Length: 146
Image (tube, rainbow, N blue to C red; front, top):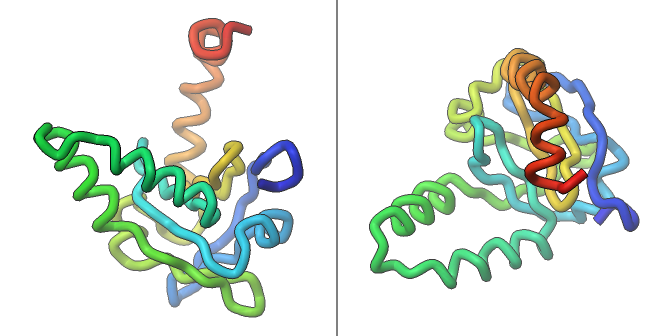
């Protein structure tokens, strides 16, 4: 992780015409030379360092394939995942299928959310954030016990 605190912060970046985005410099070292990008929840992309991806894969192995919903989730999640390697400028190509899934156009927010990074379309994140701000106190009480 990025120090003892994991990934944190919110950064506005731009996709270029080739579907590349520069990752924040403070995230690059922790991500390492190769990492994984997958469809995330809530119409964003999840970016995992190798060690976190290994933990995700271990969890997925415990899901019983006899459950239809488990098969569907695993199939959809993993079929869209890709291993990524940034270029010398710290840019990574976001595959077309992942850009379409997350509705990524030109401007994107890259968020540090602990053990992973999320990539959001700018407008989608701003709209989502407004809703989250309104319910933040309730979420804190129910999820974190704060």
